[in-house]
Length: 145
Image (tube, rainbow, N blue to C red):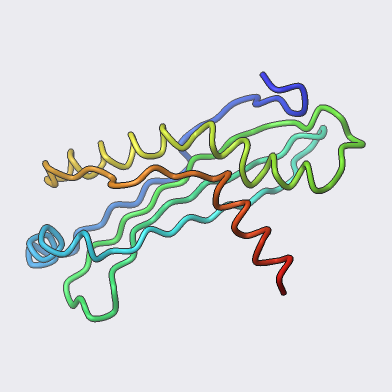
């Protein structure tokens, strides 16, 4: 456990895996590597100093692919910042990097399982999700603007 925050619980909040037609399945088997990974992180305050962090991952097909599948899922993490006087920059890092990094391996395992159980037997998420690196890159972009 971190001395800056405490994770209270986590759960799968939403799973959506849609293969609208057999043509979409066949097409996506060949084109899945062209799909782009999208990651969305949202934090919402709850009662009693708790927060709900939603980590959503999805694959988005390029516009030129006609028969598409749709897949996304969201893990919710309920947590509490232990020091209410913590600096905003440190809280931002906790929300955008520290807590998400704890769940990156779980996200990849769930995504792989969903795909494999849906008929994509050879599907393996090709890259690790490094939320720390994403946070640092976003910070550099923000500073340069």
